[in-house]
Length: 125
Image 1: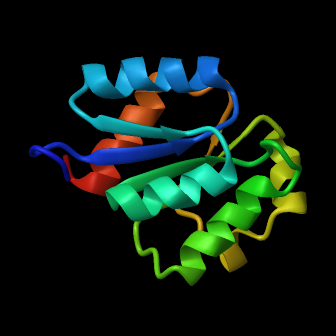
Image 2: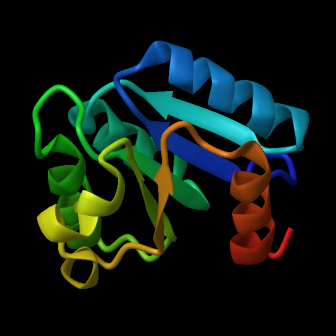
């Protein structure tokens, strides 16, 4: 938390998506920290200790998102991590959710109401 607000780390290489997420999150009382690469995401994680993390599956490299999630887990992360994907139903074929310890998946484009509902439930906001 920062200044009494939950901190959400959003990692995606699409600046338009990050801007859209920032509008929704900040309008609804959250603090958003952004990163545009897996490497930057790991750095921001250590700098900010976010309450929840949203990671794009495919960024600068095809497996950048899953690699970041594995690195977060190795770093001792216990915060909920959600994968962001445009892959759709084929995602479960490509990614082992159990192994990664994901709290869930958001499909692009993100349904803002679904996002806010998940945040309220997971963060008890």
